[in-house]
Figure 1 (cartoon, rainbow, N blue to C red):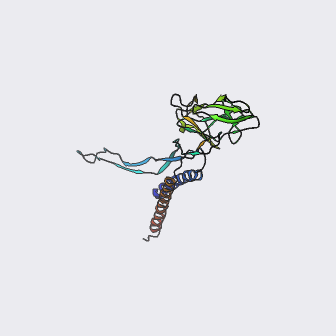
Figure 2: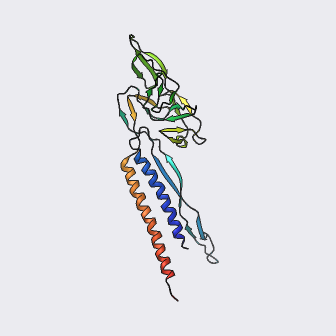
Figure 3: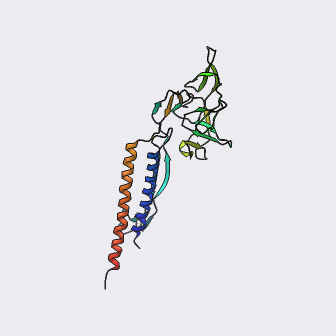
Length: 262
């Protein structure tokens, strides 16, 4: 059997992975806080027919050898944590992170998760939560008689209550950083969970020691660039077509060999 059939099949599967990744990026082009993914590949092992340096005579050696590649395989789908554009919303509970950092949330089962989506809300108790009702960590409660909420670039949350002229501080948002954010596990819903590869979470004050700052009244959009993704989509499709053409050509060659008569 011709090796090209198996080699090109690995190419088709690899390009399918790239197209699937690109499709997910395009689907989330308007998802707040979404971080695009990039498929990465490596060539497979080689069938060595002649090693480089093999003697070709008493005084000469093969300068290159003969090695035939056996295809390609996906090695990683890497999350790119570059910043997305900011969109002004004028909603006092919307925040965007400029720079490094994640908002920490707590799931009902106590699991700590992290997000870049700063579209915050208050629940029936006045507690700051995300759109799914997961509590922001550290917990911050907005009084029910608050008529104005201010969130500083350093994360300090202050409210102006009815009948009071001075604002009152009710808490401070912190941001969590990781030494390797690309190692976080994406669990959907714009949420990430730490892994052994991401490193331990480090909580910090916005604006201190390289931690990002907070912008009130803005949300961070997806960092997907649609033109780039469409270009990658076309490239992946053409590579997929080329690999399928190799299979067709190999099949035709086998048909020719099988049709030979003595």
